[in-house]
Length: 462
Image 1 (tube, one colour):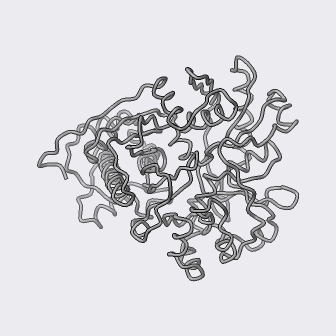
Image 2: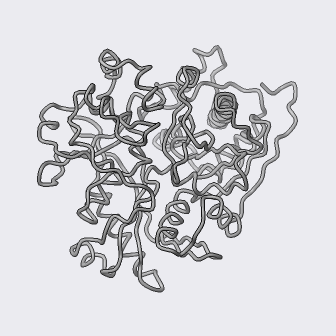
């Protein structure tokens, strides 16, 4: 994405879109990081051609928890694993025998997810770890390949299960208890820190100017997405809705209570020292996998058609818990949804339209529960729910979320993550000034949103 930013201007242009397809090898599911890096370079070249001046900066955000291991020469030890790989099955229980889960939460403030970095590292091959000198979370790995500079951006570090939520540093004692070398974990960067110029070979391949630099942003994509929430004041909740849905509130400090741990809420770092107090909800992965399954079977797979069909299905249908770990792996999604409905004592949705409606009803209910829990656990009251990311285009999901929450839902922008990324870069280089609220005001002034008011509940609603 190419961003053009000034005090009264905020524009995004798509320069290069490409698929991100994992690869299954005999030893498990991996990310094709070399292909992704190739597309990253192609994207830089395309942005340079589309730019009406010189590109000043590049910032990279991505999903959390996954990493590459580098040897003493800075060479990738092997292809990074995909967090949906089954190698972490049962590993958390082994880690918890060495480290009390209550201690983990009191230090890191992270919700339990079986693929968090600390559990992935516990599942690592001892041979790979012996060869590893550095751990690079994926946005930091790509930044390293662009600049030759190693480091770890704080918002993504906060998702590893090895970061101290109060102190804002690596949790050295947890690293030791996990049996890991502290030397694996690099110096921490803040969003807005300039990493350095691009390497000569990168400039030669992409045609960018020697003055161009890489700048750290909220490299966990949700951290950038929350910057891109066009809220007018602090009384808001957010749903960053894509493959995953991240649902929560923005706070000044972490909530590390036993009740918060039992509710499985997470405290992740945000831009400008904020805390993203949230819970992961499975997200549109459920719908995307179902659509892919129908496409393979030769059934209707056009999403607008499926959503229109689902809109005609009345309320009061079956719902399931979208956060069930059974939904993490790929494949046979509709079969697992049917099983989840049976286990919940709900009727099984018959046909594509009812299955889509069941997915969206279940997500909306999960969003509403999570917003209510976030308010109760943090004491942070909200008047509106901002739904950003790809899900903001799903009118049915937005309407159902407003109804389930009993609050207005403001949908958009779709590209909140890219906007937050670009704004942090722009502020670092003087194109804009001010705090998060100043940046959010610029988004409101330049990007339209759609508001959905909650409808009165009827006797057929849950």
